[in-house]
Length: 249
Image (cartoon, rainbow, N blue to C red; front, top):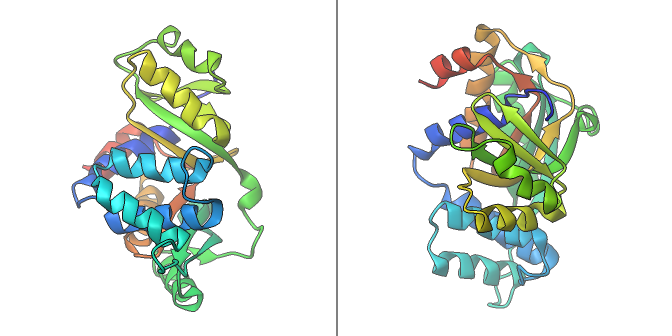
């Protein structure tokens, strides 16, 4: 067992709040199209596409929408998606490092929007490479900590998981990105209920925040994620669970 990061708990609780605003089908479809364009339209041979499709299914996106997004990405329907993936690096309140994944057909517009939102909420855009070294790409599966013990989840290690982390009130199962599907399938076969499974940028160092800076940072992350072109925001902050509950209430 590794130490507590609270990152999985933060992301899961935040996702529950965000879900009240409705599922972001547009962003999910865009992620599917980009993955299909870059790696082909077969989820069996394209891990990024398989992950994007699974996220869409988890969000209850209709099958027809998923299939249309794949066709758009591959250009099979004569409508190849002219969308590129851009990774912005920057800083938030309290010196927190940010990786901002965007998918856009207009690089200039998206860059200006991201810079504006960072500045407005007490952050700053950094140079390429300025914070990326603080993160590692990993698969992360989140399990409700109240319903299982570590022993119940050892099937994940047998399937290739790197670690099992007890993170506040959830388990965070960490994998190499290419092993995420295999480990998830092993857990589902063992009747383990999965709260979420995704490929993330996992911070190697975390910055503890007091409540004032945590509130500012959550507002910044919310503002970034509400932008149509921003697909995902990763940050290396750590917040006390009680403080987080008050912020997200």
